[in-house]
Image (tube, rainbow, N blue to C red; front, side, top):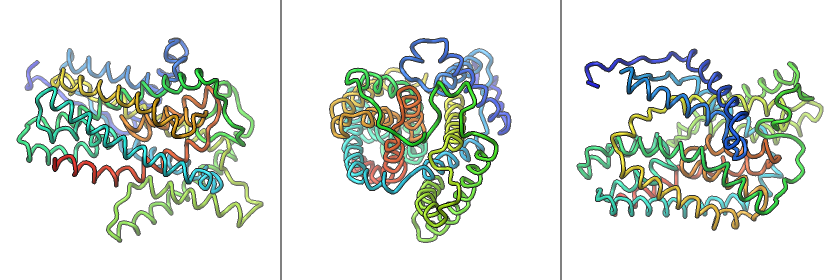
Length: 407
């Protein structure tokens, strides 16, 4: 295929969202009919998104057409999703999880060192510049596409390695695929091995149990749904204002982090100030909004992956990523699960840790959601992991990346 023959087409935003919905239903169809996907808790958006990504790769290879997607609405869905997580947070859970947050943060920092050490081993095995280790480690995996893109030019300038930018993006893409595929099986293994049971919960946090999806669940009607949407919108407005104020101090936070924090504040003050005011926290209507926004976000993220960018990097990239997957699974089974309590919540967190350590926080939440829909709720897991993965990790990762680059 010649470069001159290659045509490109950008799928506009509205159509991209519509395709995201179709991709979700494709994944739901596959989950119902493929036992492996169902038994090992592979999220519907993952199976559907990867299928479409393979189709777009085939179109690129044989149709000489590169499909790209306008993802503006996808990013808005992420903000809405994290706002619902904040609205579901209760101070009692945060206080109970205070020690667990510190443990999970310490584990994550330790894992980032291990991840970059594994990347360094990969550069030695495949004779690559040692500074490229971070692009095969925490810059692209825990850091994701954004961090990989930010550090790629720096590594290229320092090492003269021409493929630095491409290998960072490709590593983030392949890591996202692995992250979406291994979390569910890890949780299933831990839960089945230990016969673990969920604790009692007063309502769902993300999504509804599978048996409730095909019927109208109690508590969901147009009034409750609109009440939940209003609370989400108000939290986002104040989250945006807070984000602008924080930016004025010189500290830049993603908008979804500010909205998450505002949601936490609202849910722990408004019900106390106005006890007779219906509040949507832990309701099925808010869980439905969480499930919708997360599912479409993840479906759009995975269907838009340009898998053909991996082909030219071949063996070295795949070899190092397989090392990273093995290191991740071993770390979760031997360190994360025992350190977080060896209980049901720890098993759900293990699925989430696989998701964000190789992919991204939404992948982690999707992994955990898929597990809890099958086995039962784990509210604390949905509070702990976003606070660590979406807030603290980026700060720690910046220092760790600089340390390894200096080596």
